[in-house]
Length: 146
Image (cartoon, rainbow, N blue to C red; front, side, top):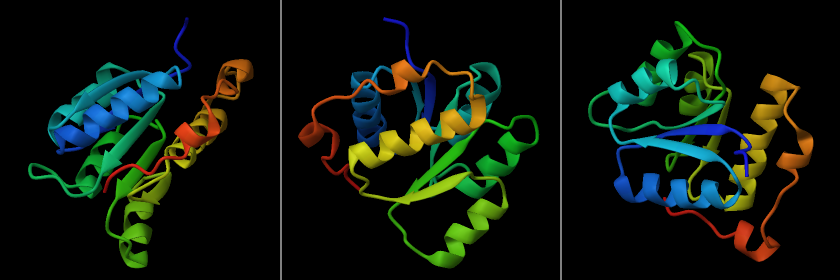
């Protein structure tokens, strides 16, 4: 089966990147992961993902720096995921280029719906029948860890 789209996950927590990879692959996405923010910037340019999932708090560069760097050369949609729910922080990361923000833990169905929304918004030409592929409702709405 042809992947729906390519997703890049940038998070310093290996458990999160592994979980995201497994989850997104079950929905038919091709998934690239990295636990190093600077490597994520490089992959954003080279791998040309359809959406980037980005953690805010990472040791080498924070999510704001990553957003700014990616926006210098790319308009790929960036979905920020963070356990911190501070309206000022949300506004500031959206101001530097993120397209959306979700607070961890995110139910998997909500995460996938937001990814699909960003893909639709960004491409318009994506095969919509692929986007309608779903897994059982109960499985798709299990919360992701924070």
